Amino acid sequence: MSETVNISGSAAAHEMHGHGAGTAKDSWLHNAEATASLLIALGGLIATCQAHAVLPETPVAHWIEDCLVPFQLPVFYFCLGYLYQRYRTVRTRRAWAANLKRELALMLIPFAAFTVLELLANTVTGVSPGFSVAEVARALFVSPIAPVGYFYTCLIIYALTPTLASRRNASCLLIGAAAAKITLVTLESLPATAAFAASLPYAITSVADNGIWVAAGMALALYRGLPLLRGREKTWGLGGLWLAASIITYAAGWIGEPAHVVLDALGIAWFASLFSTVFRNGRTNRFFAFVTRYTMAIWLFHAICLKLYFWALAIVGVPLSAAPWLMGLGALVACYGLPVALMGALSHIGRTGIIVYPARYLPPAPTVILRKSSR
Image 1 (cartoon, rainbow, N blue to C red):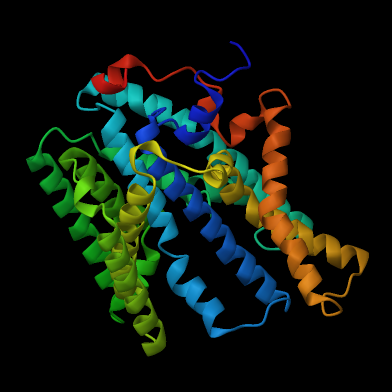
Image 2: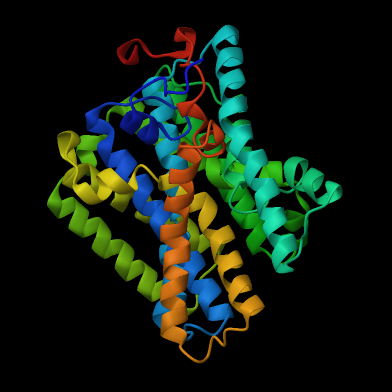
């Protein structure tokens, strides 16, 4: 097979994990995912710099970590559900097998690769858990490490969830996903059941925690409900509501699973409204045209790069307290610039870029799982 992508370069970048090459009208989704990736990395940057006393611990920084960053991963699940319903038809055994076979490759390649890379980085920097056969096995089969648990969860969701054929299907999926979410949050929140909830397998808790966002994306795609969220007034209203709710929640000390359910739901609705309004009909800009090429690279590489950056400073004996803002600037480059550089290098070294974007190098999706409008 040729070294080139099975679709155009920009489309492959937007395809993320191969849900669909998409059309220009999907630019709002790609831009929302790119923004979520940048904010997830921002949360990692702040936490790491605070841990090394490069940044002071301020209420604004804690608000970002406690309120703004947590709903970014649900944005990914929401977008996954939307694209899955929009570009896939998985309602027969044959289609289910074909889709799962493809997703196994699309998800397991980055999952396995970055599990190993994260553990190796831990070993180099002296962070636990380090690299060992036992830890690799545990991370792959029992308890995935951040951030690659996303791929593990997505595989289970794909295995359990056919695409929707009717509004009745959508209602059943939403009710089931909401029931699972409410049950998990209740178990985690009650003192009598918190220990039991903590002992549940990751496969159960991760799907129960995130399935509702996938279901919401699928339902929105089926209902063609995006116009209901579009509009500057709706964007300002949802954004203001999320901001007010997050500030009140943070100030009152109500940060916890029940509060996050509300904030995550409002945040996703706000992002869907904001990006579908600003980037309506395929509009985009130079910033997002660039960033969307590196969405997954920034998300997957930033934590590793930050670990290695501060480890390297310690090895050469650079005192972080001597010039904290300069050290912080270097951390910013490590968080955002280095992942971009690494992705650029991987794209030009044989097929190594497959560990980040498998869809760029694998054959196109079989027609049996493609929705007719996307063929």
